[in-house]
Amino acid sequence: MKKIAFLGLGRMGQPMARRLAAAGYPLTVWNRSPGRAEGLAEAGSPAEAVAGADVVVTMLSDPAALAEVAGQFTATLAPGTLWIDMSSVGPRTVTELRAQLPDGVGMVDAPVMGSVGPAASGDLAVYAGGEDADLERARPVLEHLGRVRRCGGPGAGAALKVVMIGAIVASVTVVGEVLAAAGELGVPPEVAAEALASGPLAGVVARAHSTESDFPVRLAAKDLALAGGGPVLAAARQVLLADPSIAERDLSAVVTALQRGQGMSDTP
Image (cartoon, rainbow, N blue to C red):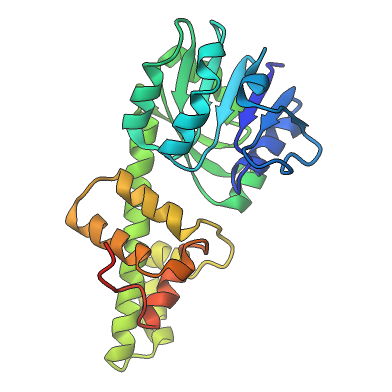
C-alpha cells in the first residue's frame, strides 16, 4: 500500500490519521506539538515525515499554519508525490500553494465537514477538488475518512467548504440571537427551540444545541473570514469574536452566550 505522511494531529487530524493506520497504510506522522502520536510512527520535522512518502496529507488549523508547514516540506517532494490538503483554508491559499509545488507533484484540496466523532468513524463529508487524475489517486485514501464529493478542479473543494461552513456558522448565531429575543418577548426558550426544531431550521437548531461536536468558536470565526466580507457573515463573525471566554469551546457555546446577553459587543 502507498506510504502516507500525515501532518497535523489536532482534534480532527489525530482520529483521521488513526483511521488510515488502521486501514493498513504505512504511516508517518508529524505534529507541531509533540506527544500526540501515541503509538504512531512520528517524525521530527515535516521534511522527515514526507521523505519517501507517496501521499502527503495535511490537516492544519488555518492558512498561516498551513503555509508555514508547507514551506518546510514542499520543495523536498519527489515527482509523483500526491499532496492532499484537508485543512479549511479557502481556495486562494490552495492556489498559492499549488504554484509553489515542484514539477510532477499533484495536489488535491479536500476539506471536510463533520466533527471529532465522524472523523473517528469515517463519516466525514469530504469535498475534493483537483485534476481528474489526482482526484482518482486520492479517492482510495479519502474514502477511508468519509463520503467523497468530487467538486471540480483545483480549489473547488476548498471553495465549497467555505460556502457550507459559512452558512452553518452564521445560521447558528442567528438561532442563538432569536432564542435570546424569545426570552425578551416572554417566550420560554424551550418553547421557542421546540418550535424552531419542528420547522425548516431543524438541522441548524440541532447543531446549535449539540453536545457531541468539537468545533472551536475561534475556528468558526476563521472560516467566516475566509468567506469574505458580506454584511451578514461579517456580523456573525463579530458575534463569535465578542466573547473571548468561549473561543476554545464548541460553536454551540455562542448560543448560550447570546442568551446570557453576551457575545453582542462592538468588538470588530
